[in-house]
Amino acid sequence: MTRLELNILGCGSATCTLRHVPSCQVLNVRDNLFMIDCGEGAQLAMRRMGLKFSRLGHIFISHLHGDHCFGLPGLLSTLALLGNTNGVTVHIFEDGARLLKDAMDYFCRERPYELRFNVIKVGHEVIYEDDAITVETIPLVHRVPTVGFIFREKPKMRHINAEMVKFHNVPNYALNTLRQGGDYVTPEGIIVPNSHLTRPADPSLSYAYCSDTMFTPKVIRAVQGVDWLYHEATYGDECEAKAKQRFHSTSRQAATVAHEAGAKRLILGHYSKRYLDETPLLEQAREVFPNTILGNEGLTVDLNKL
Image 1 (cartoon, rainbow, N blue to C red):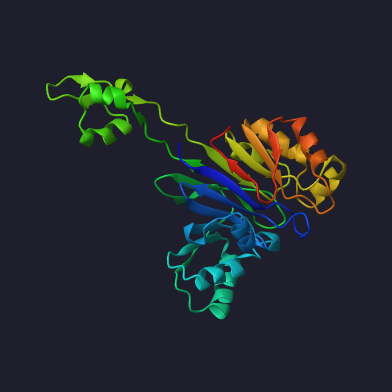
Image 2: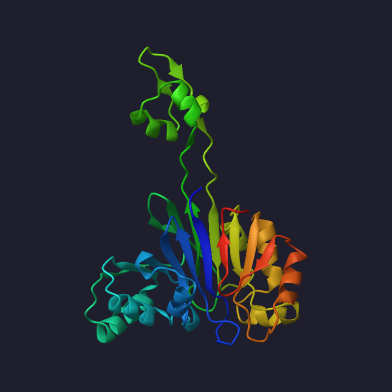
């Protein structure tokens, strides 16, 4: 089973507290690291969680509020000090790309790595693809242009049944064809069905990140059928009016999105500083969607374990 782990570095909202720091996550896909948002303290959290800076190649910024991007200049400068030569791509809105480039060119001109920008827009489109995953944006509803991200694993290869492969004297050069679903044809022209020689592939999983957004059916449609959903839960039921006014969501609304979208698991985060205990938020969410957990700094989630 391939590695697919979510590391939560920060799950607070705009104001840092002694309990939570601003939004930041790192998704580990086969030991390649993808950062989602980069609030203050991101690089310190990476060190605490033992995440390798050298494996970080892409950073996805959901919107240009400070609690989702103020950690970028420090992190990118540290990569230069560490002698990183692998290159980093920041997926960000156009204004953010311009401001960040100017800041880095002023404070960190001599970078040993290439700093690339992929300008994103509010919409639904694939913005990244490799042999393992695709990453697509989905439109969210917030006070400034904002997107969520859906990470989808590509279909995986089938597993070789070593005993049956040996029984049918299948040569090594034919194994990759078997993994891709092809049959084996013996030198005598006999077709051995793939199902006799392999076992089914592991399921391909999906992870959706939705922060920040007010509750809207648009998000429900956008994340339909995802396996894992991270959704902001800035407020509890008692602040539903404030959530709407500030274009945020309550934990119950986050659970409603998960339920209506047919997600399998829900992770809450982006908590308001007013809460010294998020247990009530969890309880309210679980009344609608029982398969809910609280995000927290330092939490690592194996997404293969549904």
